Length: 455
Image (cartoon, rainbow, N blue to C red; front, side):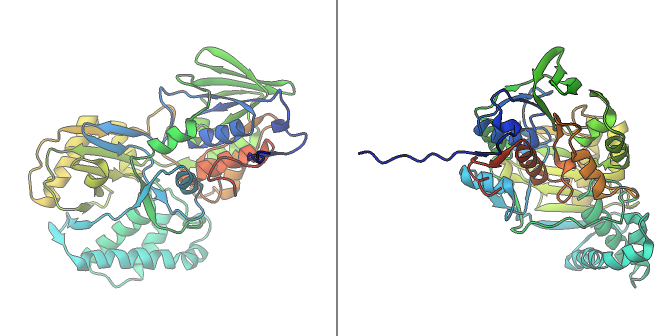
């Protein structure tokens, strides 16, 4: 007698939507949240159709070939791998990731015209560590309406620093702690809930080959319709109707995973309209503007990664990552965010952005850079299907606002995305966690997707 083969089966809540053979979930958006929910539901036997506005999947992950280089133009890191569902999924599907071992070899201070050594790095690291340790006291002293800029000023006022060291310390706080982490302007990121998110252990990692292998594996077996921008969603007791790309789609439930920036813009009309609680929460939240300029060269003419402290401390092209080994060709990626990003994204052309980064590199290295063989400029700020990078909390906003955005509207309209996950917003793992959350909400008690069995 042949042994019985026991196949893993999803556990479904009796009487839930996932238990109903007539359930058909329309998922709006093929980013990490939408693909996650769709994958879990599909593997549980639920009919799912994903409607994606772009001509590609992945959302705010975007692995592109820039000449001979492979570069993530959107999300690029796994921020911690222990307790991270992205890492769990990658491990289960033999998708590798490698530690971020970026070598920061150049620190240039524009005001003094100097390339600084170990002492300059130490000043910045001390300021970053000291500021983050002092946050509890600063929050209590400055109150719930303070910004991170006010906290920075209060902290630095108590430090005995030279003019140069104060400039370095302010840069470390503004860029490392705020604008390159939360993506919002230091004058607009609220202090009250700043730095409160749990941190996953295991260090920062880069997915090998970028996020594309993870995205493509998630999408396997799913019904995904591209170039279907959703403009209207009608929901009621009998089901849902979604207008996308000029066509009408009907289902039993709709899961909206578009970014908070898109929800705030009102480009999707809801019938009935979104609740006052959700609309108010959306108005209190904001979205940061982290952008990249990618330069690919014929040869590596520089040494390691570079930090640039601009004279006016406005965050001008502050970080230049050498990702040559990761990209497979000599490549620098300039990362910038916050107020400077909002300013130049609104007024500079791609050519001006590239020229600005090259001028920064020339100033910092004392060398005239050769002409790049290939370039790329991101525009997440104006991308109509993103309208920013990820959520941050200004003064007056709170994690309860994120929970309000995550809350279903009635029985058939659900929401997911990084901006709906109160503890980890702003990260890829937040998007994935939100997709898992909504699959559970629809009745999938036990997930059978490899890597997510414990989720």
